[in-house]
Length: 524
Image (tube, rainbow, N blue to C red; front, side, top):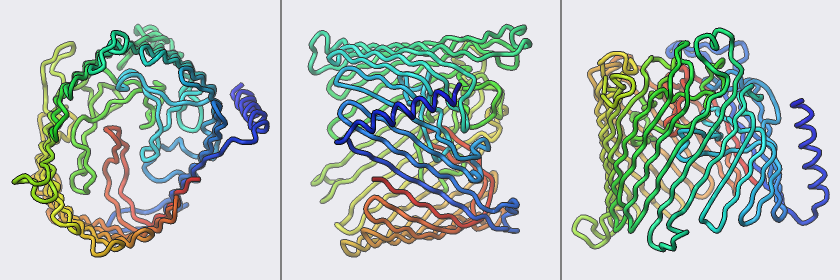
């Protein structure tokens, strides 16, 4: 049946495209290839096939209100650390779509999100090997920016094929400010409902489980003269956790101000049994049907990402058996304008963030348990001259290696200097100097990176992350890239440590390995 549905959609797309003579086609291609080599120091020995490759080809056609597209993926085999079910070449996405100013309908694969994504989100993140596109139909209608409604039905993708789960959902947003005619105020109420069906075993039914579950969310958004408030309540419905019925729920509150160079945001969130999977039978890291971001500073520097924060949503498949978490963050920035005492000739930006999260001491309460994660960071960005720019960052991170099962925490202090100098309009260098000090885990680390850019085409870099506190191990990386128009070629060689790669709070675990890599990205 899936084969015939795919074939019918392709034939429909082909027949429509053949009738068009003045539309346009866009596309992109990406390949990431690794050759793994034996490294006794890193305790790594490649498999019999030392090669891995991830490939993506995406094509989209547009003609007036009509569009159609497809995506082909190939893994031969998949790169180390990615979900193992990504293992062949296949057409993973295809769709046809029609829309005007108010109305839109899609058949085939699509992505969507309800509210913040706590109830439902389908999206693609190639860094994580995640693509949970929905195969089905989607309808959306917007009436004069006053009332927006959308409904969807379909089967989420899992791995290289479709899952056995079906979802049906609807989302409604009512702009009260537009209906009343309040030009300076944004006030909207929103709500969503999601129904999920998956066939379950007789044992699960005997334990109180049901193949169908229904969740909902209610949201309130307010914005006036830079002041804003967002609130969301989510009820995920009942699910089985270790053959025990549990009701998932979440609360999210965000309050802040943004204006005149100042931005302050205070966020609080509580999660309880919010782990929502596409399939109850899969342990894949890509087996997600909702999105729970890590509401803390999202770092990019090497030493600041050694222990990234991964929210504890409450799921028996994680490393802990906590029912969830609670906590929040305070984020603030200020832009000192040019000509002020601290801003100087070119201004200065300062940013600070404090985030802390705990396990739930008891289900159904807001009583904090063991500390999961705490981070305080402060960074300053200053353009000293037309040529020289500096970023200084300090981060104090406290991390629970037992995922909240015990009170044990590791504390580290990290400092980073990021220095950019433009020698000529086309030649620049950027240097990172980093240091991490701690009494736990593998003790102290240091890291450095040097990047040399010859605009607009060439970039050369080399980095080393060295653990001089315990293992005395170097994790080095060298590479070069060439960019021409919309095409970028890059290659490199390096030694990589085990750990986690995260994107917005969703993480996948990677083993240590050594090897060469090559990538091409292009679009047209």
